Length: 553
Image (cartoon, rainbow, N blue to C red; front, side, top):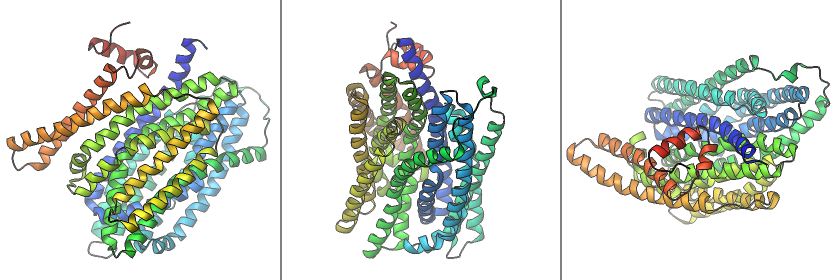
């Protein structure tokens, strides 16, 4: 394969992945921003109900429809690369029908099973926000099929656009409805649960807005010239349904295991600490800090890995159909390196500045949140790597491999969590430790499998070692610099703690970004050829040469 062809195929993955990653990152940022007023409005107790409701909702969503975009994109990609456009269209019709049926069933089960779930977790009021969430599953089932259809044609823009629309509507409605609910039910025992329900209403209406956006884009989609030609379908609907089911099942199980870790965490956490006579309000507050602050912040950079994992699947399917093994390894290497270059500094940034960031965003100065970030920030690296390697294994048609890895990791995770909560006073920090452990086990097992199936040899120095060292040095600068700057500002503007923290925190985040990328380039962690392969890479390279960070070749 020529260097020009290699660069072109790699750039295609990075471009589509970057489009989706950019949108996913924006969505996470919007989610982070609106959660700030939402948390302040309804409080940590209500956020505990909110998060607990989402654990069960997410499990139902995974079982019914979360896997549809990936499954549809795989099936459509394999057919469109062979110009079997009518078969690809039949995949869409079958999947849309499938999504309609399973989405309806799942929504009804969640709605009528909300009380049972609340009783099981010793949090009966969680049924209120959970019922509001229930119809969202149906909307996501249908919407996921449309997203997968576009992704199968290697077009991530509709998914990206619909995600942004969804989150904007979600943010506006969630905050507004939460205020209305908290006022309406003020002074009642159910106030916190109804406040959480206001937040979940935004999720439903946001999904509706995204679905409308996708169907409009589908209506005006520009067809490939060959699609208009007369073509005879080679696959009947029954065969396509069977292919969809056998593609969906391993993805469902794999994703369900991931979600089960959160759902089981809720149960183990509440039931074990309840047996130790820790009050429900205290447990809800701890769980709210963990799920609505720690997990939310650590999941923001993981969005990039999720997007790259989604983008690489149809691309790997296409290369498998063409029989280009060398291109598969090249794309895998590029995707992993791209993710690690982003994940390491995010992890060390959260470790160094987790406490100040929580204070800046939520006004939370409690030691628990800061300790969670310091202990669990490294989870960003492991979840980013496990997510993208899951996508690789699914793309090369080893669909059940990530399932077994996740199941083994889940068993280890659950045993460790139960033992920590039962036999120590570590409390909510046990959740963080086991969250890191789960992702680490999946990373190791996925890496071994990719090496086995692709004969892939991971390059360690520029993918892991240099980003780690550069990030660790950056973290040290951020940690020390924040404390020095905070003391200086506190002397200049005494009594303004919030403003002092805001200025010191934002300044150090900005400086940390500069320090990391200067160190990464100085240590030769990224080459000029790799920069050129990135979206707008040539523009970035010219900028770096002007700054004398790189020499013109």
